[in-house]
Length: 118
Image 1 (tube, rainbow, N blue to C red):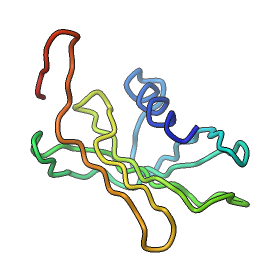
Image 2: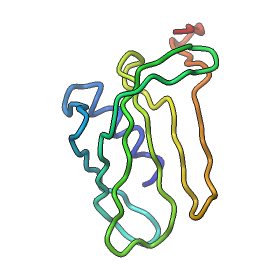
Image 3: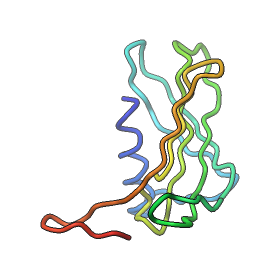
Image 4: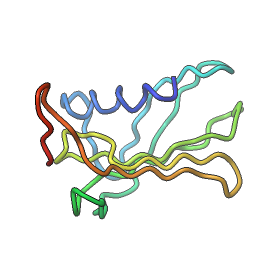
């Protein structure tokens, strides 16, 4: 589904099963209410993001290609940070037209018994 793609891609990148490289496409199957489609993301650039609490973080920016016969207008651009175990540190969800939600990581909590700021 749309949300689990973030976990799937994180696992691929952090395990080394798939490498992030500018100019390389990344494909993932997504099941949505209207059906299943193969989505292709282009790794468009590596950039430095200024996060509120983690400071400057290097991340790869993935942008989705338009799909044939789209069933909706919602798409997501994703930024994955190698230094943070390839977690998505920014997600920009476009809802069609000029409507969007732009999410940026503030902190990352790890470990079962404590909070560790990276």
